[in-house]
Length: 413
Image (cartoon, rainbow, N blue to C red; front, side, top):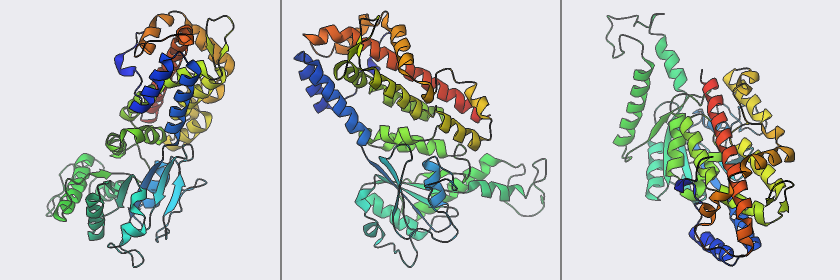
């Protein structure tokens, strides 16, 4: 068993940490666990509101569906169509994480929605950041909207959608060997077909037009309508996570599709910061002795935590079935690389086995977990239980995160 890395120590808001220190210092484990439980529940309720806007037909509603892990035909998907289908801000909660809400806003620049009053009409202050989508070039009203968002101190990101259609159109100018058909005709196209060159040209043209319009340091992300794992979607995910306030980061990470190893690693790191609090709650609120172990804990709470980790990394029957369909892979091929149990397989018996596995040797690490404050009374006797549950949760999280990476690798083949 590896030692506890300093980076894995709990990152708790200062006021919560002071309350925890006081409770632990008093030897009042019940009070400390109650404070920890309160902090966890607060984290789970932190709202994240994402605004998505763009012209009619830009793929805006499809993006709203995709970022929520849905297809356009799924139940509760945003309605799509060639004409502007959205006539008012429509809220679409994430199907698994309802505190994350994606808002499908009416397209700007139509007779109904003018640039100069758009943000006021759309209740600007309600959203954490904006995604501005276009499937061609960004227009003057897109630029005006971005400038106003910038003036009011919020983040926005330009998404150039449907680049798969651009690539298909360009490919028609090349033969089966990827050689330009009309070599004598005046053209700026490269002699050999190159997807990366075409994408770079699309991105550069978008950035140049936005800069000419007065947008400072525009960020443009190229997306496919049908395959979010391709092109710039992983980069968009990472940028959104990095630029969000820290207290909102976990909410976004949990809701994001597993399309890059970098996002999976960040998700794991954020979830690690909660393990200490979960362990404290387990050892102090509804804790009961575990037969055969010198450990007391709330086994039901631990089962819930293990199931949540599976859910967060897409390791459930439903999530894998959806992923297999989207990746056009047999679900058995995905399951073959998974070493940890799926969400449906987690029971109290499994939690008992994991606790037994990590009980031996865990006690010697208890000083790391309580090292931030002197402990007395019942907290001293609970140190062994806390270290056991801590390392059980930590190792399970490591395992499911590794499984998610292996599943991703299969879908990318």
